[in-house]
Length: 417
Ligand code: EPZ
Image (cartoon, rainbow, N blue to C red; front, side):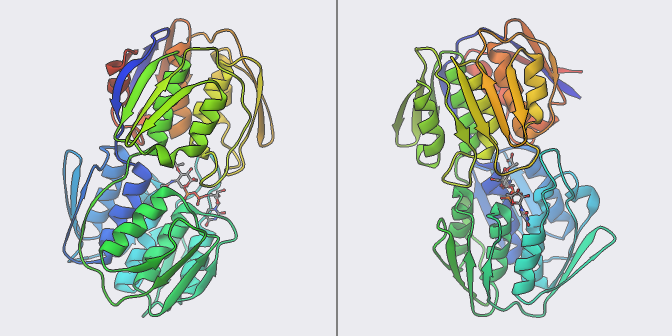
């Protein structure tokens, strides 16, 4: 297993290109199941999770190819409708094939994804939505079996805002008979990106990006070509890196308009931001101020930036309160940050972070994707060397993170453990 070794103290400066968004690419690649014929996607990030979903699509009978950041998928001849446990356990977003398979084939058998480090992460809302569209659902031996001769439009209310739940049901409704209305739908840019691709394929979708989405089902969808939107969480991670090191970094190929809440909090912390179209310059030339944060669904402060922001607050002047409202166990990074000298106390869904003069380097253990990124960030400013183990967590969601950080001045390398 690889490890990442960071020597703290380097000020980051220069330009870094942001990759395509993992959380937009995963549902969009799954949407290729809704049609036969070659779909081409560009600006796809080269990540483990992308390789995982391509393996899954191939196991269903699709043909796929990946050339750098361009992916093609042809699901004309599906030969299976089962997503096996050994693929789903590696990447829970595999659940995104459930609804396209039922819409296209009338049947799907998908392993329950199970929980993960940050929470139980049930899929009850995915299943409730699919049932409302007329599917019969059975759960047996750890698998979901869904059947529907023809899905019929329905009025569906999500008790909790769910990103992949909204995406899954949107894909099913696109081929259902009649009108579907999704209420309390997720408003994330990744949901809008999927809706845009479905509309390019011939779907009739209104209201994506708001909490009420209306879908008029159509009889079939056609293949398309689409570019994946930039990854707002990778962008936010690099913004935090620039802020932490008192740096001057320009992000390119990013969407500042997808980062309003993160930009607002960084500006409150004293960071200078200069957005211009698809570039965003981040400069930090004064001590970091403590700022309170509460994670929320979009357009609120994203839960996927909570760990990264906690590192910034650990190096700020004063005390900040960080409240995690989306996942029940998303403070795993706290114990590792404490080993690096951070002063953080957790009570339930709230962390109190007191800024310290310095963090110190130490060996730490990655646990989930964003917690791992926060450990890399801490290593950038810790005194001495920080060694991050189990970096496969990072590779799931960040394309060549150590190369990109080295390009802007970090002393960081990847080693074989
Ligand atoms: C998506 O996960 C993202 N993943 C996550 O990013 C992100 O943290 C999350 O949305 C929240 O923004 C992808 O898009 C692939 P949810 P998702 O359904 O869809 C509860 C990363 O680091 N819930 O919006 O699985 C759930 O337990 C990953 O890139 C139910 O109760 O998240 C959670 O508390 C981590 N029942 C809340 O809703 C359901 O059926 C939000 O979860 C579904 C969800």
